Image 1 (cartoon, rainbow, N blue to C red):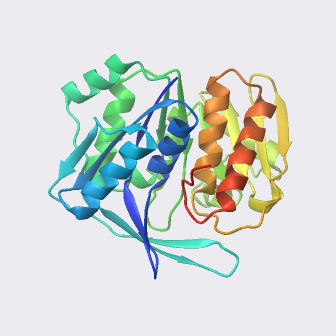
Image 2 (cartoon, one colour):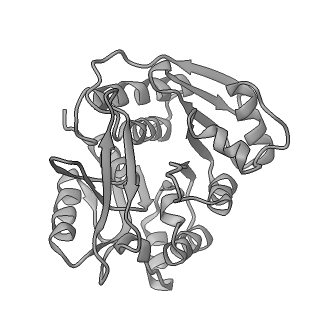
Length: 289
């Protein structure tokens, strides 16, 4: 099982510490820890944070062969966490991962690897340079499945970047907090009133989407499989929450590994809930069991 991600490598900077992060990195790390062969397309600065990031990624078991050095600084996100453990993010701009440049030799090498799954989101598309890198991979490379975890960060997405996710994903993951933004962007032709209606609307408008996952925090998660017509409501794992940072990334990773392993929709959703519950019980985005 081979998985490729493209996106941000960010140091999450808290008032008292720095932690390596970024949704695509977290996703790749969790899939590697679950036994997949994972690689990441990104860029880091030629600086101490960049060197430390590459070491962390290597230690997670993720290949760094497609991570380039940039003249820009390594990405940083300033994070604050409220009393409920819910994070708020302020992502710095024009950093290394905003300037990923890919040529024909790069995508030829990616294609030769035979990746089963490709992961991307909206944040990496906020800059024209890295947006072109995403487009080039989608145009030049073949994958069995594409998962998009949209991750709608304030001022870091557009209708165009959301539509690129919707038009290319076979697996789409959104949160119940993000879903209303689809309405404000005019994605739907109707006004769906339930998770099932939301999922069916999206798979009708974008027939490439085979599975829609909607995460709902402590209320659990919902999934719809277009081909089977099956809906799954998965309860959240009851844990003492230390932090929700990276919980959604871990859910998507565990779901994807189970899905690619041939597990049922119910089994894949249960795997996602199990791992995300464990992550919520720890302060790290990628805690090691």
